[in-house]
Image (cartoon, rainbow, N blue to C red; front, side, top):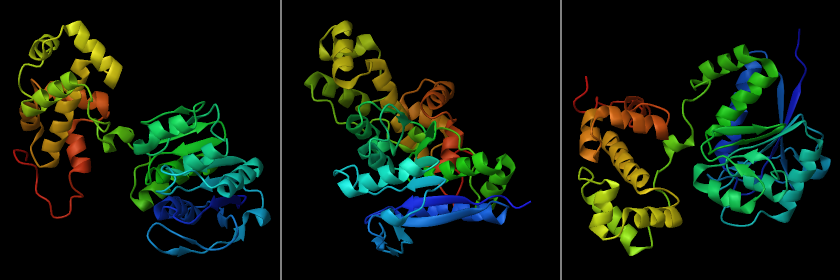
Length: 329
């Protein structure tokens, strides 16, 4: 029995991220090979072609005013969206198309367009890990989830950075045609049906600004200079000549964390860098200040949801022409 057609409208604009379009489009196209029935329509505000992030012109099927009602509206992202305000006509286009769509989804920074259109108000959402804090400020009533690869809130879907659009598209295929068909698509495209861990496995743990308070900068410098030294709360407080309680208060006020969590994050980032450079997990634990491999493993489980070994296999190399990490066989 032939399945009914599922129409997808993709809202594009000048400066759009090419992979935000091509990644999900390949998923839907591949789904058609396995029995799905998706039809994509590319929409721009005025119906004219748009330039992509890689300089390629993207042809457009129709303008917003002539677009039909879609089963799914997909809004792509672009590098300039977080830095500047979303053009009013683009926000209006998303709002008008969404009002007629069965479900609405954004890829990466496309969430900023949904936010400007008022579609994230009182909704759970996510975007690229670099911009989650900014999205939360732009959309104060939205509940932004910084570590999710994609988030569903009713008929609204938002995804994390770039390739997470593929994860979201697979989830939509599974919703439309079942897990078996989605699994066939994932196998054909050689991607995970569901990736382990969230966005934090791709982000820098200490991505925020450096501490402004001289005492906190001293603590940071001391830990980074010798991560294997004694960095208990008492030792750190004594080093900068304040009480443990006052040091803890300073960390909470300026960095919204505790001294011990901050020490662990510095060691954790160092351990990741050591793994990236080819050291095995035991070496990485010792050189970054963790007392044992087991303590490093627990830190990886807390922050990434995967083991150091899995992290190294997944992110150190594509596997093409590479050698095994030093000390591992």
